Length: 407
Image (cartoon, rainbow, N blue to C red; front, side, top):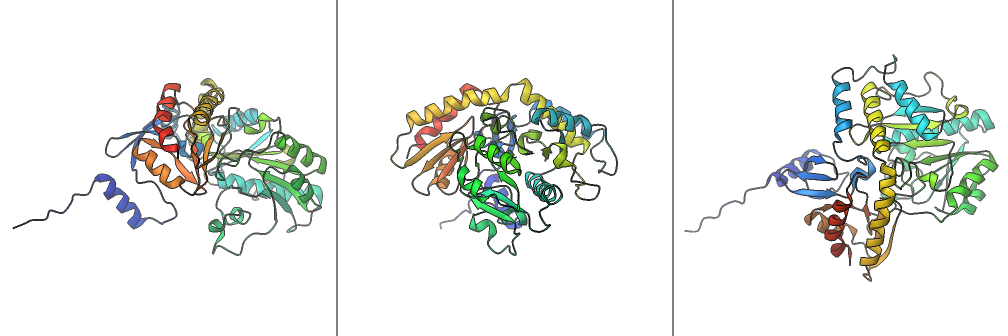
């Protein structure tokens, strides 16, 4: 008599099944269940270690569970976490002053998620255009770039050109004009009498680390200044060291009127974002015109201050520049497959673009080999490790990854 024994499920399978049974299907994660992180490494529930080469899309630039940031979070959480903006707290002012000094812009409006900070910037530009330029309310226009990714709120998806971000979510929000990314002449032509601002990523991350032509940022800054409209850089992913400078706009000295920050602003431990601007722009906000229960809370402030200390004390922007050059040189020298269209990057923000839509399969192979990345736009694999990754750790990860990336 033959007995058939049912196969035992693994902890990974059980946890994935539970998440899929009770969770919405708005993501397609790799079949890895993570339970612990330290520096550039994460471990799954079965004890396997991986090199994290995604870095939570740049949110954990300071590394997983950086002890200085964890200590700041723990100490503040035990003392005071949330007051709401009905009252002042003793940590927010220091956080705002620190971000203002770092950005070179006079004032800061704290929020929580990146999309909230983008929405804040949109509101600021619209009201500024109405009050300062006299554009009739509800007629204000903002120029954006094709291939953009600024979040997934209803207003933000209204100016995305990715069909799945928009499908079935109408009616969409009007007031946006799209031009090709990297084309300063097209942008100049798009600025009209109703234009109040220009909202752009200096490098498009979700679109596959698309890097504009040299001089584009500088030209955009000159055009917006000449036409008297606001320039807003969305540096949620590119900012705070990722591209080898504190901010990506510094590569061409293209200081904006509005700067949008998030992700690494808190070292990946807590949702913190911010919109930065000089007083002429920020003064359009009056009591009741905008707000957030959690924005600027003392826990967020303590975490942000510690995250910025780590960024500066450990010279993470300089590390990103050095390690990024090394990684890009290796990738370009050692990957020569006919199926690879382009290898590009700036700092530790790198992409391998394939001719065919194979990026998801490549990401799965890399995960099986112990290196975590994620695909985007079906044919692009991004590499965005924590900026604290050691040179030897990065080399070891590339040793494993390059034979798989070479198609």
